[in-house]
Image 1 (cartoon, rainbow, N blue to C red):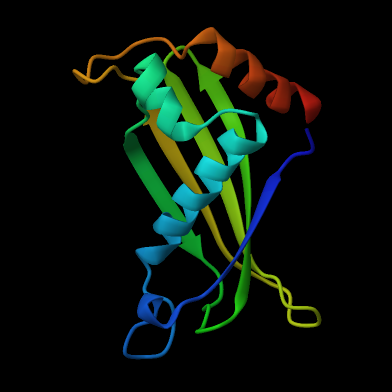
Image 2: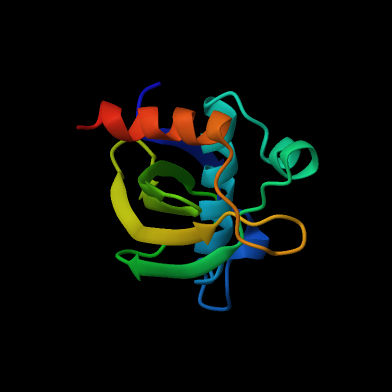
Length: 142
C-alpha cells in the first residue's frame, strides 16, 4: 500500500467560523476522517475493530500546527500515516493540504496519539492482524 493514505474532502459551510475560515477544532474531525480511511485502505473497518475485536482507539494526545487558513468550498487533501506503533500505543501524523490545482498549499500538520483499549477502557495490545498491517506501512517508508 502506498503511504501516505490520501483522502479528499470539500470544506462545508458549517465548518467555517464568523471570519469565514475553518474553525480550528474541525481539523481534528478531518484527522479522524483520514484515520478511518487509513484503516479502510489496509482492508480493515474501524467500526468492526470495535464491535468484533474489542479494539478501541481513544485519542490520548492531539496537536496541530496551523499553517494557512482553509475556507468554504475548498478541496482539502488529508495525508495520513502511522509514525509509531509500540504495544498498545499508536501515533498518526497528518498533513492537510489545499488540493485545488494551482492553489496547493500546506494548511496544517497534526498528530494524534491513541491507546488501544477494550470496551471497559482497559489497555490492551493492538490485535496482531491490525498491528501486522500497520507495521508493514511503517517499514515501507524505511
